Length: 400
Image 1 (spheres, rainbow, N blue to C red):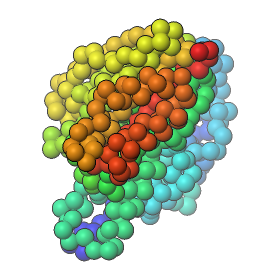
Image 2 (cartoon, rainbow, N blue to C red):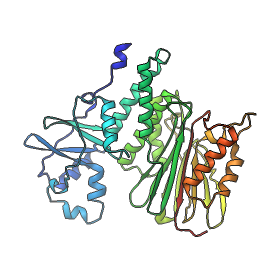
Image 3 (cartoon, helix red, strand yellow):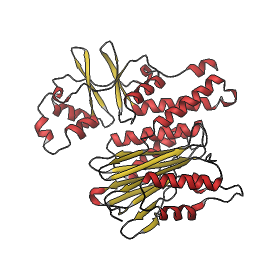
Image 4 (spheres, one colour):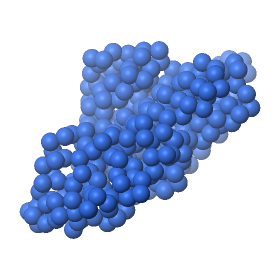
């Protein structure tokens, strides 16, 4: 048992051998290599046997080659023209937990999707961040079978896992390109089963995700970690619609939980350029939209698919509707509507809708604070029986 507790995988066990390129390789040739292998996230650049940098797929196509003329401009130039020496590098002797800690220290938003493993200027290959997260998830799952015999040292490991989970969440407040976002989780145990995230999808389009695993604790935390990893891997591979993101995450949850746990999940994409909201639902609580022009709060109770991890063939229909300046979008988990007062009465949807309507013109952070305060006052405690997650987004630019 003691040996099993110390068996934390190292980077040398998960590194993927990857084709190398030289600094003089033409950009056009690098494009062909990436297009020939959709799973390839980065290419190490080696000069005379010495590692010099990495070419990241996402940075190459979106940062350098995103404009129509860019491929013609750079196509025949050497790849060294586009290198900046900023690629993340780690040693093969690091274990996966230490590697994640170092990655989060350098990149708190976890925008990095892969990094090179290098010893003494020799590159062994690339580690996708999704693989790193899956290894950490596996380590957490193995701890579950030993919960009854947890020592003080193992409790500290659980606390560390809780910190890792919290560190993987995006910043609670965000404001950019006419969109204001406020999100947060109040967990009911050390490791929660809720997840929220937001991310840019190119241009001014933003994605928002809220998810809830059945139950909470280490095993649920493992599933949320796998969901986060798979979500960002899919985004890196160019998946852009809510239904396709849910379908891809469904496969990851099935592989991780093997139908022992299910996850409800809601994916929304805000497109300010089109004044449009697109969303798909995998068995999650229906979100709310406040339409500023009409002064109307509505529940978006369209058709919902099965929760993630239930059926490999699940499909997730997509819905489109206007989302104009001044409009609000409220995503949440059932922990807030199902919390109860001392008599056992639930907070419920009616109370939440009344509060949302009353605070329709408030900033997202104010709405989130008001909802949590109302639920705490109703229950008589701010320690809820289930995880409570709120993610609120608002289009700016409307005068009430």
